[in-house]
Amino acid sequence: MEEPRESAALGQWNSQRRRLTVLAYNMLGAWAQAEDVVSEVGENLLKLDPAAAQQVRNWPAYLTTLTTRRAIDVLRSAQHQRTEYAGSWLPEPVDQQELPEDAAVTASMLRLGVLFLLEELSAPSRAAYVLHHALGYTSVRIAEVLEISPAAARQLLSRASRKLGQARAPSRESGQLSALLSKIVEAIRAADAGELVSLLAEDAVLYSDGSGKVRAALNPVIGAHRIARFLMGVERKNPGRTVFMGRVNGEPALLFRLADRQDVVAIEVAEGSIRTILQVSNPDKLWQVGSRWDPLTG
Image (cartoon, rainbow, N blue to C red; front, top):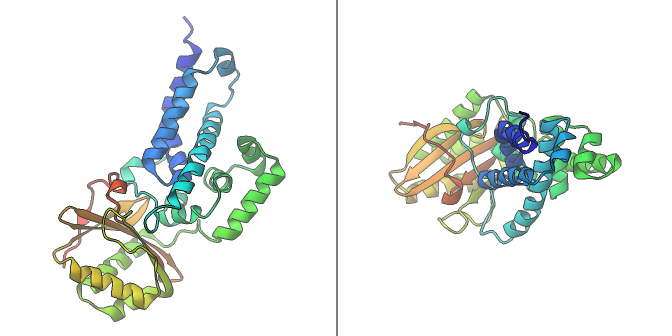
């Protein structure tokens, strides 16, 4: 007996679920929201007319379209809410184990620094940028997904690229990033402001996300000297912190722990210097960081 089309559709959705979640996460910067988006896509497939399901010739592309369109709706609402956020809104770090090795979304697009920059784009522009740079979609295919003209799709891509510049470029090799992170910890522990400043670009920026739930800098900390003073001040006020090295979003990161508080720190590097420090302290965003962290002793 032929399998019902609804079951076939859900089978396709289930086989693509992890990939779609990564795509939605790249659109939203929040894993739980991404999971909700993909679940809604599955629920909508239950309502799909069997005749319509039979017309689907490319299920991965079809599911990508449904996921992207739903993610755009969610992102529009989320971006409005994020304007009222206490302090800097940073993407939610995701443990390496949650990211499939064969993820269609390229690793460089999943970096916290890239996701943070993508927040500057409108929902349609972000969708176009992700579809093009992560999945290799042409402007014609993007136009079909977004239901706009190819010319409009090209315009979205052009504007997004100008705004983000070299966002997709890998900041450095993993080993080099790990070494820089270790040097940051060593300098903080030694209260060596000069060493910290030497690791940072003169115009480096530190963003801290506590969402008003834990103490964090409400405004970005700008400049190498100010960042060095800030980091050493945090260390003085929080004696006994343990520090770990691990991986989130495909790149090395630090995890600071003290009592019931955790802080995940990631960096973006350009021309040999640290340009951006992202410190995620909001406890609601740290449920996906996992337990595979190695202690940094010293």
